[in-house]
Image (tube, rainbow, N blue to C red; front, side, top):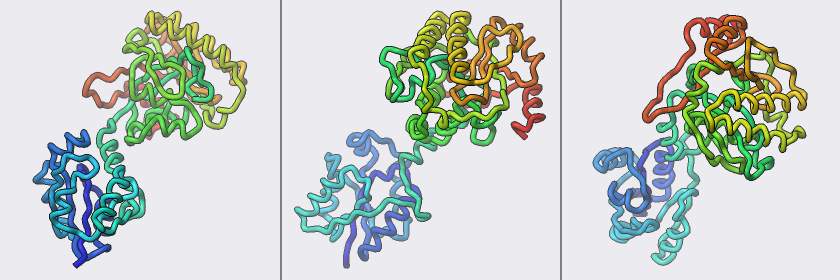
Amino acid sequence: MKKVFVTGAFHVLHAGHVKFFQDARALGDYLIVSYPPSDLLWRLYGRKSLLDDADKLAVISSFEQVDEVVLSTDEDAALSFKTAFLQVNPDVLAVTTDDRFKEDKRRFCEEQGVEFVVLEKSAPDGKTASSVEMLNRIKAPTHAPLRVDFAGGWLDVPENAIPGEYIVNCSISPTVSLKEWLYRKGAGLGGSGGWSVLNGWDPVASELGLGVGWQDPAVIAETGACVWKSGEKPVLDFKNTGEFLRGRMAVYDTRIEHNTPGLACLERNFRKIAKAGRVARLGVQEQDITVLAVGVQMSYQLQLDEGMLPLPKIGECLAHKYCGGGHGGYAVYLYETSEAREEALEACEDLYPIEPYCRTFGKDEAVEWEPKYLERLRKRGVIE
């Protein structure tokens, strides 16, 4: 009888493990599965299993491919299974391609004269499978804010980074979910970053993969009014709740298509962008909307210089600019008072109120516009 041995944490059991057990069992006649108990799992790997030891034993034992389950008990991160392995004396040790201790296990098998096999990691449908991906989906919020950028945009793109300069932005409500999206999609509010956060993906990696910067997923995950240091990766300079902006912000739907990745390569005056970022940073630091407005208006002038179409003046606004660099989508408008914003909202059917969003501990809930603004969206076909 040819015995095959596999080991792992198995802190989240999923379809990838079904395929792993199937492929390992096909290597012989008898499959032995080994895993560390929860206390050892934590000591060696800093992981918490979603299943307690009794549940894990019951679930793994129930797989038709599994003939025996044993515990890994050695205080060795790479070879915690060593004692159990030597006791059952298997013929084959099988691992997956992403096993971080693969080479340690290979050397161990050479010493023991045991066959060592590396199996591709996949689910039954051929897709890749990962416990980490599953945990990230579980931990992902059900609702997320989007964002408005005030100044310093493009300095979050690694190749444009200027040390000592800043990107200034703010997360906003209404929030979005995978089932309810209260804004036009692809319209400059960091929607792709929000989508990544809601799916439990690595949002910064997802955005950089599009050839744009990291500011959208960074502020959406952080929340609040944020100032970031320009660089290759997000480094928060400081933040506040953004409460000084409550009742004083709105977004205008230009109804023009927004395309940031397609315009990332245009020539820009990054030194002037950085200067606007410094002014906006001071506005957030002092929680002074009039100072912030100067930085926003400086950014808008640079957008006009780049060739973006002029935005309409809506009410007595302090400043306005396009959200993002995509020559369309939404634009953010700042007002000195809530009364001034309310007058503007009444005057323009394409203007919608937004509020600063700063997540408190444990908060994960929907924030919507009041009914009259939802009705505006329905009339325009943005939502059903």
